[in-house]
Length: 290
Image (cartoon, rainbow, N blue to C red; front, side):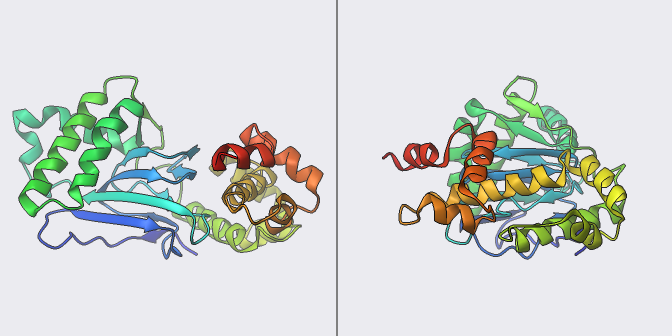
């Protein structure tokens, strides 16, 4: 599966695109890019954040600004259908208000914000608290008020940009330095893991075959692209799946263990603690309040 181009069309009665997802659905796009700026707010949901060359995990309240043509992973990637999840997405072209709009003196802070977005920007709790409600208001505001709310949200982000509450992700500019073939390989690997993580054994050889590389070349490539070994990547993915299954109190921990591709409970407990700092039982108790 290739790095995919996402065609984006403005929302009706709007000069930009506004999307609202209230549940996980099967994503048609996994590893993709587009020429629009993208502002993503996730009030509910956690998972893997992969933007350009940056890889980390996100939790409830994620707020990130992604620059044009910067490849990124769908934020709901790996989350089972039915998992609690909400995402508000704003996508806008650089000239959505005309070619010279950002050149006006009042827009200098936002212009600087957009310039920095090419490396990806993540915002902290204070900014999320200020901007999150504005983005939620976009969902019900009439067209003119919607535009004003968007500008207000961008100004809030711009004010945070010079502070520690805004962290650059150093994701690279538009994926420069990574060839299209490398990006396409990574997309195929992501898809293969998503489809096969429940199997107890995934050999490096078969994943290398998916990437059309020898095993040594694949190991070097995968480490470069994800900063993980394949084993750590698959384990992290399985633990992410387990976190969501543990929210179903009707499933025993043992059932969750085998459903996520672990072949014994001891290994599951050890791996789960490695990535979360808790045992599966402790995680469930904390999340469900039991």
